Each structure stands twice: as structure tokens, then as C-alpha cells.
Image (cartoon, rainbow, N blue to C red; front, top):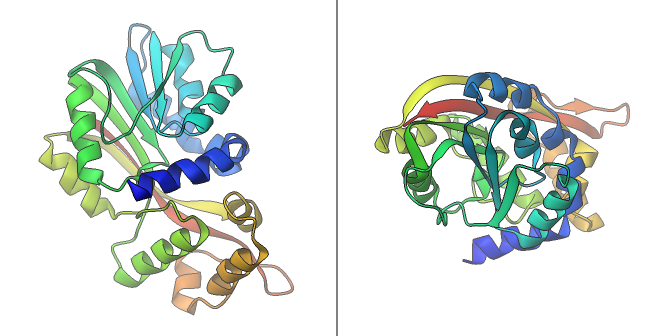
Length: 254
């Protein structure tokens, strides 16, 4: 419960930043997910942990209804206002690990760049499986940790330092184990390095100069192997300008 309260605190404070965030508002994955999901006008979709509503906005013109959920009331209210022109979208405050929907209801379930905030990943996947119709599709996108232990530890320590509501960026192998346990079948997957502009990224959640300096110091003093793997880029003064984290996109079928 403490972890979920942290999520509510961080996202209610920074609700506007997640609407305008270049990392969340852009990305080739938003166009690709339309193609992968093969959207149809009779479909009912569930967008879990919608945040700034970018997936909801992307798919709503092509389906019958979108139920857009988030655990943070203030975030959801802001997103509903931002997407006020959408006439087929409904907003529900909901915990991804305890969805208030009946079994076998949705043609599509989506969750993008959010699951690293979920304390119980297994419970989340259980719920996805439960609310999906037979042959329904689940489109999942999230920041992931490398299988390499040192890269895993580095990126999770970094994310926690910058965002106290971060729980864990999990490995692809961890996600696949949970999804296969729930008899969800992998149809497509892709991985990419996702560039993060440092200033925008760090200021999205932090406003304390001391906290920002701590994150900068952690990055600037990372081992060379880490800097190479995460594609660090520095300015002429030697300060971090950007880096790139791992992201996984996968389409599953019930």
C-alpha cells in the first residue's frame, strides 16, 4: 500500500509533465501498436495505467469504446480534460492489480510505460488474463532491465533515485515467465533502446537541486561499461545530456 501511495503522490504532483513528456507522447511504438492490434470498430479496449492518455488517444478513433484507467485520481482527471474531445472514452480510477471489471470482457488490453510502478507484477498479469476475452489481445510496453546483473542493478538504482514511486524495471525473462504462466501466447515482440533527454527526464519527477545533483553525480561517475551500454552522451563540459534505456514491446493473445 505504501508503494501505491507513492505512485499517487508522484503522479498527482507531476500530472501535466506526463501529458507533455516527449518520451511518453512520442515514440514509434504508438504507431506500431495500432498495426499490431489490428483495431476494429466493434472492439472494446482497456488501457491500464493510462498516465497522460497517449495510448487511449492513439487507439480511440479505431475502436468502439476505450476504458481508460489509472490509480491516481488527479492524473486521470487531467488526462480526461486533455482528451475531452474523445466521445467514446470513459475514465475509471482503478488499481492495475485489482481491476473492477467482469471476466472475459475486453477485446484488447494495453499497458504502456507503467508496469515498473506495480508492486505485484504477477497479480497484474493475472488480472489482464481475467478481463480479456478468449482470443483477446494484450499489448504490453515497458522499460526493462538487462539480463546482465550489473546493468540491471544500475538502471533500477538510477530510476529509484530519480522517482521514489519506481518499484522495478523487470527483465524480459521475468515478464515472459509470468505471461506464460497465465497461458498467454506471444505473437510479436521487439526491443529498442529508448533515448532519454536528461534534463527533461530528471525534472519530470524531481525539483530539489540536491536530489538532481545526486542523480547527475551517479550518472557522471558510472563505469565505462555502463556508459557504453546505456549510450551516454555528454556536452563539452562533460555533463550528461542524454542516455538510452531498454524497452520491450510485446503482443500476447489469450
